[in-house]
Image (cartoon, rainbow, N blue to C red):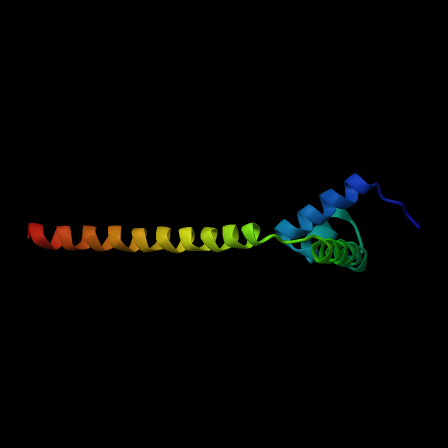
Length: 92
């Protein structure tokens, strides 16, 4: 049984996040199930950490504000496109 360093596992997981499990396992010469197991363990640890952390109301509000900012940016882009469209139409 081969032992892999923590750094190698982290890099392998990062690669699998970028290009997918199958391609990453082929590229690294690992069994698909090995890399999938590492990912499952990582996700389980992440979920356990999230459950244990306290989410303050400020953090929730900040997340809401971030979503609102994104929506407003999208609305601005739509308005800019519309303005450009109508400005071209006026020049004719």
